[in-house]
Amino acid sequence: MIFSTLCYIEQNEKYLMLHRVVKKNDVNKDKWIGVGGKFEEGESPEDCLKREVKEETGLTLTSFRFRGILSFFSVGYEPEYICLYTADGFTGDLIKCEEGTLEWVEKTEITNLNLWEGDRIFHRLLLEEAPFFSLKLRYEHNVLIEAVLNGTSMELVDLLDENNEVTGIRREREVIHREGGLHRTSHVWLVRRNEKGEPEILLQKRAKGKDAFPGCYDISSAGHIPAGVGYRESAVRELEEELGVKVAPEELLYIGQNESKVDTVFYGKPFRNHETSAVYVLDRTGVSDRFILQESEVEEVKWMNFETCRECLEDPEFPNCIMGNETDLLQRYFEEK
Image (cartoon, rainbow, N blue to C red; front, side):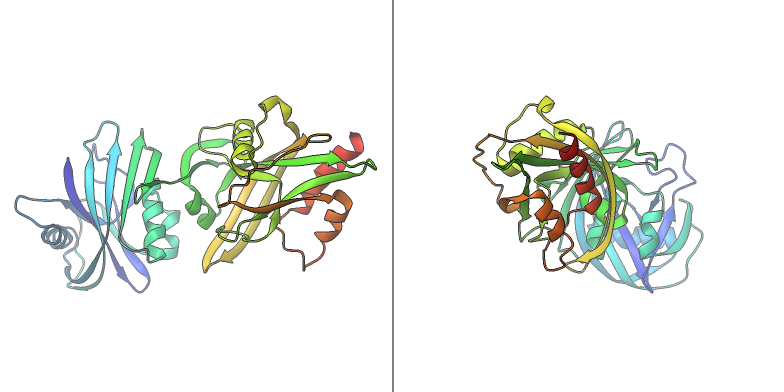
Protein backbone atom coordinates (compact mmCIF):
# COMPACT_ATOMS: atom_id res chain seq x y z
CA MET A 1 0.00 0.00 0.00
CA ILE A 2 1.32 3.43 -1.01
CA PHE A 3 0.59 6.56 1.05
CA SER A 4 0.85 9.91 -0.72
CA THR A 5 -0.38 13.50 -0.91
CA LEU A 6 -2.01 15.42 -3.75
CA CYS A 7 -2.38 19.20 -3.68
CA TYR A 8 -4.21 21.72 -5.85
CA ILE A 9 -2.68 25.16 -5.33
CA GLU A 10 -5.11 27.93 -6.20
CA GLN A 11 -4.69 31.55 -7.22
CA ASN A 12 -7.11 33.93 -8.95
CA GLU A 13 -9.68 31.15 -9.55
CA LYS A 14 -7.01 28.96 -11.13
CA TYR A 15 -5.38 25.70 -10.06
CA LEU A 16 -1.72 24.90 -10.61
CA MET A 17 -1.86 21.77 -12.75
CA LEU A 18 0.93 19.34 -13.59
CA HIS A 19 0.91 17.70 -17.02
CA ARG A 20 2.71 14.38 -16.47
CA VAL A 21 4.63 13.95 -19.72
CA VAL A 22 8.18 13.12 -18.57
CA LYS A 23 8.32 9.80 -16.73
CA LYS A 24 8.04 6.49 -18.54
CA ASN A 25 5.86 3.75 -17.01
CA ASP A 26 4.03 6.45 -15.06
CA VAL A 27 0.52 5.56 -13.88
CA ASN A 28 -0.32 9.24 -14.53
CA LYS A 29 1.34 9.38 -17.98
CA ASP A 30 -0.14 12.23 -20.09
CA LYS A 31 -2.69 13.04 -17.38
CA TRP A 32 -3.16 16.46 -15.74
CA ILE A 33 -3.07 16.26 -11.94
CA GLY A 34 -2.11 18.32 -8.93
CA VAL A 35 1.31 18.19 -7.30
CA GLY A 36 2.40 15.78 -4.60
CA GLY A 37 4.02 12.44 -4.00
CA LYS A 38 4.75 9.55 -1.66
CA PHE A 39 5.38 9.75 2.06
CA GLU A 40 8.95 9.38 3.25
CA GLU A 41 9.91 7.62 6.48
CA GLY A 42 8.71 9.49 9.55
CA GLU A 43 6.60 12.05 7.67
CA SER A 44 3.12 13.21 8.57
CA PRO A 45 0.73 14.02 5.69
CA GLU A 46 1.51 17.72 6.15
CA ASP A 47 5.27 17.08 6.16
CA CYS A 48 4.93 15.17 2.89
CA LEU A 49 2.66 17.82 1.40
CA LYS A 50 5.00 20.73 2.05
CA ARG A 51 8.12 18.84 0.96
CA GLU A 52 6.59 17.57 -2.29
CA VAL A 53 5.16 20.97 -3.22
CA LYS A 54 8.54 22.60 -2.58
CA GLU A 55 10.41 19.99 -4.62
CA GLU A 56 8.03 20.01 -7.59
CA THR A 57 7.12 23.71 -7.77
CA GLY A 58 9.63 25.71 -5.73
CA LEU A 59 6.75 27.15 -3.69
CA THR A 60 6.49 27.17 0.10
CA LEU A 61 2.95 26.63 1.33
CA THR A 62 1.63 29.00 3.99
CA SER A 63 -2.08 28.11 3.94
CA PHE A 64 -3.74 24.82 3.02
CA ARG A 65 -6.75 22.61 3.79
CA PHE A 66 -7.08 18.84 4.12
CA ARG A 67 -10.11 18.10 1.90
CA GLY A 68 -10.41 14.33 1.75
CA ILE A 69 -8.98 10.84 1.43
CA LEU A 70 -8.75 9.12 -1.96
CA SER A 71 -8.44 5.34 -2.17
CA PHE A 72 -7.00 4.45 -5.57
CA PHE A 73 -7.09 0.94 -7.01
CA SER A 74 -6.01 0.00 -10.53
CA VAL A 75 -5.15 -3.31 -12.16
CA GLY A 76 -1.38 -3.67 -12.41
CA TYR A 77 -0.57 -0.99 -9.82
CA GLU A 78 -0.15 -1.01 -6.06
CA PRO A 79 -3.16 0.37 -4.15
CA GLU A 80 -2.70 3.93 -2.94
CA TYR A 81 -4.19 6.08 -0.19
CA ILE A 82 -3.97 9.75 -1.15
CA CYS A 83 -4.40 12.71 1.20
CA LEU A 84 -6.08 15.43 -0.87
CA TYR A 85 -5.35 19.10 -0.15
CA THR A 86 -6.04 22.52 -1.59
CA ALA A 87 -3.76 25.46 -0.82
CA ASP A 88 -4.42 29.18 -1.19
CA GLY A 89 -1.28 30.63 0.38
CA PHE A 90 2.35 30.32 -0.71
CA THR A 91 5.60 32.18 -1.18
CA GLY A 92 8.36 31.81 -3.76
CA ASP A 93 8.55 31.47 -7.53
CA LEU A 94 7.74 28.53 -9.76
CA ILE A 95 10.61 26.37 -10.93
CA LYS A 96 10.88 23.88 -13.78
CA CYS A 97 9.34 20.59 -12.68
CA GLU A 98 11.10 17.31 -13.41
CA GLU A 99 7.76 15.47 -13.38
CA GLY A 100 6.20 17.40 -16.27
CA THR A 101 4.85 20.83 -17.21
CA LEU A 102 3.31 23.17 -14.63
CA GLU A 103 0.52 25.46 -15.77
CA TRP A 104 -2.09 27.67 -14.12
CA VAL A 105 -5.52 26.61 -15.42
CA GLU A 106 -8.91 28.24 -14.85
CA LYS A 107 -10.99 26.07 -12.51
CA THR A 108 -13.83 26.16 -15.01
CA GLU A 109 -11.52 24.78 -17.72
CA ILE A 110 -10.09 21.87 -15.71
CA THR A 111 -12.62 19.41 -17.11
CA ASN A 112 -11.37 20.10 -20.65
CA LEU A 113 -8.03 18.51 -19.75
CA ASN A 114 -7.05 14.85 -19.93
CA LEU A 115 -8.05 13.81 -16.41
CA TRP A 116 -8.62 10.57 -14.60
CA GLU A 117 -12.40 10.09 -14.51
CA GLY A 118 -12.27 9.88 -10.73
CA ASP A 119 -10.52 13.25 -10.62
CA ARG A 120 -13.60 14.78 -12.23
CA ILE A 121 -15.58 13.58 -9.23
CA PHE A 122 -13.39 15.15 -6.58
CA HIS A 123 -12.96 18.34 -8.62
CA ARG A 124 -16.75 18.63 -8.53
CA LEU A 125 -16.69 18.11 -4.77
CA LEU A 126 -13.98 20.74 -4.36
CA LEU A 127 -15.91 23.27 -6.45
CA GLU A 128 -19.04 22.59 -4.41
CA GLU A 129 -17.09 23.08 -1.16
CA ALA A 130 -18.10 19.61 0.01
CA PRO A 131 -17.14 18.74 3.59
CA PHE A 132 -14.26 16.34 4.23
CA PHE A 133 -14.88 13.18 2.20
CA SER A 134 -13.62 9.69 1.51
CA LEU A 135 -13.65 8.69 -2.16
CA LYS A 136 -12.82 5.19 -3.35
CA LEU A 137 -11.89 4.87 -7.03
CA ARG A 138 -11.33 1.56 -8.79
CA TYR A 139 -10.02 1.30 -12.36
CA GLU A 140 -9.55 -1.49 -14.84
CA HIS A 141 -7.27 -0.70 -17.77
CA ASN A 142 -7.71 3.05 -17.11
CA VAL A 143 -11.52 2.73 -17.14
CA LEU A 144 -13.32 3.79 -13.97
CA ILE A 145 -15.41 0.81 -12.86
CA GLU A 146 -16.30 1.81 -9.30
CA ALA A 147 -16.67 5.05 -7.35
CA VAL A 148 -17.78 5.09 -3.71
CA LEU A 149 -18.30 8.36 -1.83
CA ASN A 150 -18.36 8.15 1.97
CA GLY A 151 -19.36 4.49 1.75
CA THR A 152 -22.13 4.98 -0.83
CA SER A 153 -21.75 3.73 -4.40
CA MET A 154 -21.96 6.41 -7.07
CA GLU A 155 -23.79 5.93 -10.36
CA LEU A 156 -21.56 5.54 -13.43
CA VAL A 157 -22.92 5.95 -16.96
CA ASP A 158 -21.45 5.45 -20.42
CA LEU A 159 -20.31 8.59 -22.23
CA LEU A 160 -21.43 8.63 -25.87
CA ASP A 161 -19.88 10.19 -28.97
CA GLU A 162 -21.66 12.37 -31.55
CA ASN A 163 -22.96 9.20 -33.26
CA ASN A 164 -24.55 7.96 -30.02
CA GLU A 165 -21.93 5.23 -29.76
CA VAL A 166 -20.42 4.20 -26.42
CA THR A 167 -16.93 5.68 -26.11
CA GLY A 168 -15.62 3.31 -23.45
CA ILE A 169 -15.48 6.17 -20.92
CA ARG A 170 -17.58 5.76 -17.79
CA ARG A 171 -18.53 9.00 -16.05
CA GLU A 172 -20.19 9.68 -12.72
CA ARG A 173 -23.81 10.82 -13.05
CA GLU A 174 -23.51 14.23 -11.37
CA VAL A 175 -20.30 14.98 -13.25
CA ILE A 176 -21.93 14.24 -16.59
CA HIS A 177 -24.80 16.54 -15.65
CA ARG A 178 -22.37 19.28 -14.70
CA GLU A 179 -20.32 18.96 -17.90
CA GLY A 180 -23.12 18.17 -20.36
CA GLY A 181 -21.78 14.91 -21.78
CA LEU A 182 -24.09 12.85 -23.99
CA HIS A 183 -25.42 9.75 -22.21
CA ARG A 184 -28.23 7.18 -22.39
CA THR A 185 -31.59 6.97 -20.63
CA SER A 186 -34.67 4.77 -20.95
CA HIS A 187 -38.23 6.15 -20.97
CA VAL A 188 -41.30 3.98 -20.44
CA TRP A 189 -44.82 5.30 -20.93
CA LEU A 190 -47.65 3.33 -19.35
CA VAL A 191 -50.71 3.77 -21.56
CA ARG A 192 -54.28 2.52 -21.70
CA ARG A 193 -57.64 3.13 -23.36
CA ASN A 194 -60.51 4.21 -21.14
CA GLU A 195 -64.10 3.03 -21.48
CA LYS A 196 -64.67 5.55 -24.28
CA GLY A 197 -61.63 4.26 -26.14
CA GLU A 198 -59.68 7.45 -25.46
CA PRO A 199 -55.94 7.12 -24.87
CA GLU A 200 -54.58 7.86 -21.40
CA ILE A 201 -51.03 8.02 -20.12
CA LEU A 202 -49.62 7.61 -16.64
CA LEU A 203 -47.66 10.56 -15.26
CA GLN A 204 -45.37 10.39 -12.28
CA LYS A 205 -44.73 13.39 -10.08
CA ARG A 206 -41.07 13.61 -9.17
CA ALA A 207 -40.22 13.64 -5.47
CA LYS A 208 -39.49 17.01 -3.89
CA GLY A 209 -36.02 15.83 -2.93
CA LYS A 210 -34.89 15.13 -6.50
CA ASP A 211 -31.73 16.93 -7.60
CA ALA A 212 -33.41 18.07 -10.84
CA PHE A 213 -36.99 19.11 -11.61
CA PRO A 214 -38.32 18.40 -8.10
CA GLY A 215 -42.10 18.25 -7.87
CA CYS A 216 -42.57 18.17 -11.65
CA TYR A 217 -44.73 15.77 -13.65
CA ASP A 218 -42.71 13.44 -15.81
CA ILE A 219 -42.69 10.25 -17.88
CA SER A 220 -44.28 7.19 -16.24
CA SER A 221 -40.86 5.71 -15.54
CA ALA A 222 -37.40 6.80 -16.63
CA GLY A 223 -33.80 6.49 -15.62
CA HIS A 224 -30.16 6.60 -16.57
CA ILE A 225 -28.64 3.51 -18.15
CA PRO A 226 -25.90 2.18 -15.87
CA ALA A 227 -22.54 1.68 -17.56
CA GLY A 228 -22.42 -1.58 -19.47
CA VAL A 229 -26.20 -2.17 -19.31
CA GLY A 230 -28.68 -2.20 -22.21
CA TYR A 231 -31.66 0.13 -22.71
CA ARG A 232 -34.40 -2.48 -22.31
CA GLU A 233 -32.78 -4.18 -19.32
CA SER A 234 -32.49 -0.83 -17.56
CA ALA A 235 -36.08 0.12 -18.42
CA VAL A 236 -37.41 -3.06 -16.82
CA ARG A 237 -35.37 -2.42 -13.68
CA GLU A 238 -36.55 1.20 -13.39
CA LEU A 239 -40.19 0.16 -13.76
CA GLU A 240 -39.94 -2.20 -10.83
CA GLU A 241 -37.90 0.18 -8.67
CA GLU A 242 -40.02 3.29 -9.23
CA LEU A 243 -43.53 1.86 -9.63
CA GLY A 244 -43.36 -1.73 -8.42
CA VAL A 245 -44.40 -2.95 -11.89
CA LYS A 246 -42.76 -6.23 -12.94
CA VAL A 247 -42.69 -7.04 -16.65
CA ALA A 248 -40.65 -9.12 -19.05
CA PRO A 249 -38.38 -7.16 -21.42
CA GLU A 250 -40.36 -8.29 -24.47
CA GLU A 251 -43.52 -6.66 -23.08
CA LEU A 252 -42.04 -3.22 -23.74
CA LEU A 253 -42.79 -1.85 -27.22
CA TYR A 254 -40.05 0.38 -28.63
CA ILE A 255 -41.53 3.44 -30.36
CA GLY A 256 -38.46 5.51 -31.10
CA GLN A 257 -35.36 7.37 -29.99
CA ASN A 258 -35.40 10.89 -28.59
CA GLU A 259 -32.50 13.27 -27.95
CA SER A 260 -32.84 16.26 -25.66
CA LYS A 261 -30.75 19.02 -24.09
CA VAL A 262 -31.36 21.07 -20.96
CA ASP A 263 -29.06 23.77 -19.61
CA THR A 264 -30.24 25.24 -16.32
CA VAL A 265 -29.43 25.49 -12.60
CA PHE A 266 -30.78 23.56 -9.60
CA TYR A 267 -29.87 24.39 -6.00
CA GLY A 268 -27.16 26.73 -7.26
CA LYS A 269 -25.46 24.01 -9.30
CA PRO A 270 -25.25 23.91 -13.11
CA PHE A 271 -27.38 21.21 -14.72
CA ARG A 272 -26.47 20.46 -18.34
CA ASN A 273 -28.37 17.37 -19.37
CA HIS A 274 -27.74 15.96 -22.85
CA GLU A 275 -29.33 12.56 -23.27
CA THR A 276 -30.48 10.14 -25.90
CA SER A 277 -33.48 8.10 -24.81
CA ALA A 278 -34.95 4.82 -25.95
CA VAL A 279 -38.72 5.36 -25.66
CA TYR A 280 -41.01 2.42 -24.86
CA VAL A 281 -44.72 1.90 -24.37
CA LEU A 282 -46.30 -0.55 -21.94
CA ASP A 283 -50.01 -1.06 -22.63
CA ARG A 284 -51.98 -1.49 -19.39
CA THR A 285 -55.50 -1.49 -20.87
CA GLY A 286 -57.60 -3.80 -18.71
CA VAL A 287 -54.83 -4.22 -16.14
CA SER A 288 -55.41 -3.14 -12.54
CA ASP A 289 -51.99 -2.04 -11.35
CA ARG A 290 -51.26 -1.56 -7.66
CA PHE A 291 -48.33 0.80 -7.82
CA ILE A 292 -45.66 0.64 -5.13
CA LEU A 293 -43.91 3.99 -5.36
CA GLN A 294 -40.24 4.54 -4.63
CA GLU A 295 -40.59 7.43 -2.19
CA SER A 296 -37.16 8.90 -2.87
CA GLU A 297 -38.03 9.18 -6.58
CA VAL A 298 -41.81 9.44 -6.98
CA GLU A 299 -44.30 11.51 -4.98
CA GLU A 300 -47.43 10.33 -6.79
CA VAL A 301 -48.76 8.99 -10.09
CA LYS A 302 -51.94 9.75 -11.99
CA TRP A 303 -53.63 8.76 -15.23
CA MET A 304 -54.38 11.62 -17.60
CA ASN A 305 -56.18 11.87 -20.90
CA PHE A 306 -53.49 12.09 -23.58
CA GLU A 307 -54.91 15.12 -25.37
CA THR A 308 -55.50 16.89 -22.07
CA CYS A 309 -51.90 16.21 -21.13
CA ARG A 310 -50.61 17.71 -24.39
CA GLU A 311 -52.64 20.83 -23.70
CA CYS A 312 -51.27 21.01 -20.15
CA LEU A 313 -47.72 20.91 -21.45
CA GLU A 314 -48.38 24.29 -23.07
CA ASP A 315 -49.50 25.75 -19.73
CA PRO A 316 -46.62 27.37 -17.78
CA GLU A 317 -48.61 26.76 -14.58
CA PHE A 318 -48.40 22.98 -15.07
CA PRO A 319 -45.05 21.89 -13.56
CA ASN A 320 -43.48 19.31 -15.81
CA CYS A 321 -40.25 18.26 -17.50
CA ILE A 322 -41.76 16.33 -20.43
CA MET A 323 -40.30 17.01 -23.86
CA GLY A 324 -43.00 17.84 -26.41
CA ASN A 325 -41.30 15.90 -29.18
CA GLU A 326 -41.66 12.76 -27.08
CA THR A 327 -45.42 13.13 -27.03
CA ASP A 328 -45.20 13.22 -30.83
CA LEU A 329 -43.92 9.65 -30.65
CA LEU A 330 -46.88 8.75 -28.45
CA GLN A 331 -49.29 10.47 -30.85
CA ARG A 332 -48.00 8.34 -33.71
CA TYR A 333 -48.29 5.22 -31.56
CA PHE A 334 -51.93 5.93 -30.66
CA GLU A 335 -52.80 6.70 -34.29
CA GLU A 336 -51.30 3.43 -35.49
CA LYS A 337 -52.64 1.30 -32.65
